[in-house]
Image 1 (cartoon, rainbow, N blue to C red):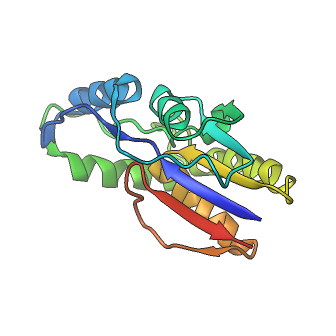
Image 2 (image 1 turned 90 degrees about the vertical axis):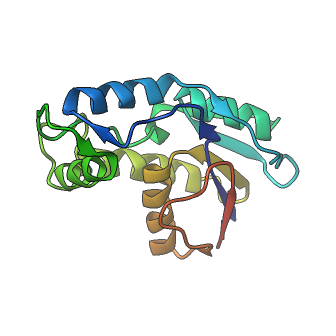
Length: 176
């Protein structure tokens, strides 16, 4: 079995380097609905089916790169985030990302979804996909979700390309 992971195309949205908590939350909301910038990847031939996040940027990417059956699911959505603290003091974007990842790991109520719920959701869809063991499956999703999917697949005996934060519109292949 072969699994292909593709992160959605790059989002066409500029962000400021420093943001208050309100500005950060607004940016995250806008990111979820922003248009994407296509690249040249088309990967139809070797895949039997595609599973895709239900967020518009992933659906658009999936329909652009793959022209077979696409299963759209909320279980492949990005791991949601929100400002962990409320402040009018602008913090660097990367500090917000770090703080919110810590809050996610700690299952903080400030986050739309904690680590336990995210991993449960992602494990469920990976287990469903792995039931199709005679097929090659393409998955179009998001950076955080793909990172967790890759960890799950490696634990289940798959081997493939390593990434910490996958590049937009790039195919990563894992095989068993």
